[in-house]
Amino acid sequence: MDNALVVKSNDLVEASYRLSVAEQRLVLTAISKVDRFRPISDQEKYEVTAAELAQVCGNHIKTAYRDLQSACEQLFERRVTVYTDGKKIVTRWVQAVIYSEGSAELMFSAPIAPYLTNLKAQFTQYCLSDVARMSSAYAIRLYELLVQWGNAKTREVEVEWLREVLQLDGKYPAIKDFKLYVIEKAVQQINEFSPLSVSYSQRKTGRRITHLIFKFQSKVDKGRKKPSPQLTPDYITANAKPGETWQQATDRLKRKNTEKAKAAPQ
Image 1 (cartoon, one colour):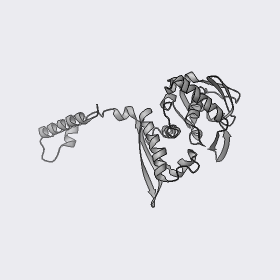
Image 2: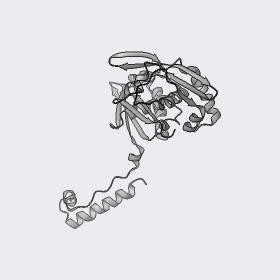
Image 3: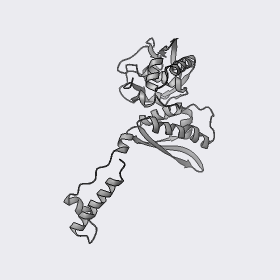
Image 4: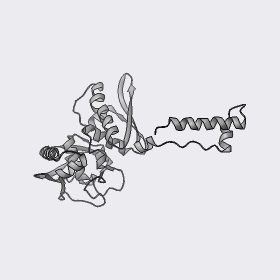
């Protein structure tokens, strides 16, 4: 399960829905078992066991049993609204959930299947383990929205659009509460559990905060030291200060490289 990939159409990533953490884990684990390279029918079943959830989430097996049963009880009622090709599609995630002790089989609904399979473009993928240990459903959703724009390293979103995507239904109407209980908690968990390092700022329209700007990068890239510039003759000539001799410029640039190396994170 450590290498299991979650692959979704970008339209599904930006869909409006609300799932609990347990439901997210169940759905995402099932999605990681879908063969995205071929069409699937709505009759196919995807089994998820409590043992798998315990392994990928790092939970005790008893907790995984409890969460699996809880997720199965509510998942059939969960709606998802997808906006695609100028259309608004309201559907269910699954058409059936078959539960037995410690195991569940999911049958995705027919309208959902095209957003999970036969994807050749406009899709988002990430490792299931990237989000498995998050305890905030908002963190999982925000992580997907950032990974979708992975190459850009930044994403600006409207606050109201994000409220709709997360299907808050009027919860946390004050921007300070929205930031505290949704955004800041999500950012903290993404930074703690995922491969991304994230920060955010805000933009106002008039006196009102209308947009959030997320900046993110791989933790590997963030921790990687930038190589010091090579002290070639051309580099020394280009960076010499007025009045400096060649030797003075060379000594100064060497000291600068040494200071940068000492200051860089280990």
